[in-house]
Image 1 (spheres, rainbow, N blue to C red):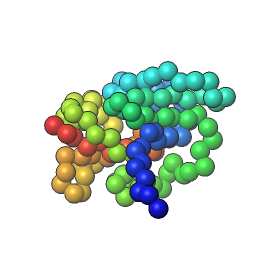
Image 2: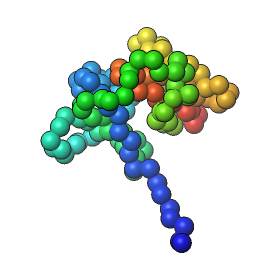
Image 3: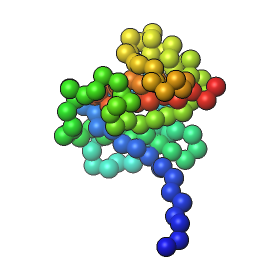
Image 4: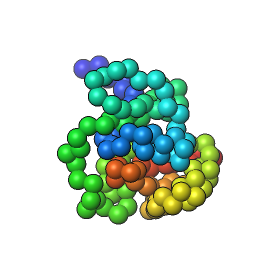
Length: 125
C-alpha cells in the first residue's frame, strides 16, 4: 500500500453558548473568526495558520463537562502552536482563565474553554 500523507484540516469542539464562546476564542485566546457556511445548526470557524481551522459547534454535547482531569494534558485536547506565547498567557491571566503548565517542561500550557474542552497552547517563540 502506498504511504498516504495526511494533514489536519480542522478540529471541532462542542459548545453550549455560541456568543460567549466566540468572544472567548477571539478576545481571550486571540483566534481569528472566519466565514462559515449555513450548515443547518449554529457554530463558528476560526482560522489557524494557512490551512487549518478550529470549528465550534452549538449542538447537544454527549461528553461530560465535569469530572474531567484537572490537567488538560491528561485528557483529549486540541494543541495549537503560537508565535507569541506570553501574549496568550497574559490574556488568560487578565481574564482569570485557569491553566497549568506542561508537565514535560516545554513552553506549553493547558486550559479549558467555557465548556470544559481542553486546549493546549505551545510556544514557538
